[in-house]
Image 1 (cartoon, rainbow, N blue to C red):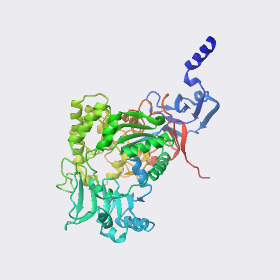
Image 2: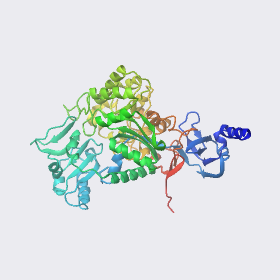
Image 3: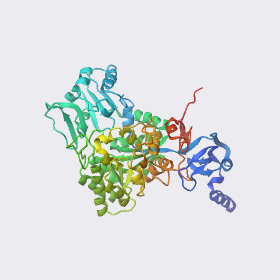
Length: 554
């Protein structure tokens, strides 16, 4: 008996790296995002976690009779990419609506909506997302008359690319009883013509005047759409996502999918700004790594202002192209402060949307007041977007311990017209990654999909080049604000993990962490910037198991 006990104790004490691995990856160029060993050519996985990182020769010694050995022939491996700000359910919904991303004109928008309406029963809603009037010849908001004439028998609801405005036709307005007598809700604006009639464009919270009358999809339809969206994320190399605002019902559906073993994402969920939901989850307390390390519920999402493209971002001074308009504050400082104080008491993180310089200042002021009342180290409060910041507020992020969670692809989408909105002086504090990094903060990167495309390499390319897919402008837009490639990689791996309190478990290919990784067909850390967007994801792995593999053409 004593002998058996000693043998068992010896086995338990044996180094994990000496035991056979489940998976061994060799002959690769592995960028680990781990400063202790930033580059390797092999690693091993056991029980879903990294067991060894080093050379191919060493890794092969961990291959047993049942070990899967993958020889990548020199291909590049990076940690699983994480979108630090996206809308999971928004992507799921978009997959089943009219795709208006990149639509070049109002005429083309109308044709796409008309084609979809022809496939639906009369009277049913037509929904779509992605239009951006800044990409059209006149750059002006559309009015509903032409859309109404083309699609008179279906109510139409079309969300702008940023999610902060909607275009509706007359049938939709009639369904919602929206008339010239309707008043702007708090935090929203109904655009009206000179005669007082609604134009069909609704800004920020005014969207709810119509969206509230649209019947939601069934729970099963939503569940299937979420699984379809998960597949789309895997195809682009995403192994995790920070879902920027979900209601209680959606969070419970996420958990149900995870309990069923169908969620192959690390899902960091932010609770939407709903008083009942916030109270419910604050009472429960922070919950992490639920359902086999798939779901985290320990953050709250608030809104300070709207978006720049729809002139809803709150500015300290008027829009350069719309004198007298300073944008919209969706939530007052007092609300953000109140939620922040309650969150600090319960150990929750607060992540607030702020785009304009006034919107960012309001959040920083609210956070500062909350932290004065409830001092706490390592709170990791975030500002989501942090797009336009007054120069005097840039140092405050580091001073307050606030993380700017930014989306590099927004810069390359907005650069064509941002100067018209802001003028040259304010552009110096716009999308100012280097200015912020130089103060000592980190910047978790994201896409804000479905506002932008899912592909995270778009944001990687924007971060290092500050150019669009056509390599415009030459030399980059305000190139002094670029990230290094090492920073850009961390902004999609280790920094999202840190900004979600997950750095001990995720974010790098380090021994003991979850084996989430991506195989690429090109080395994004060495190829010319103009080749980055030509890079393909060969395979995506979560916990050492492949969840996507590219089918090679014969």
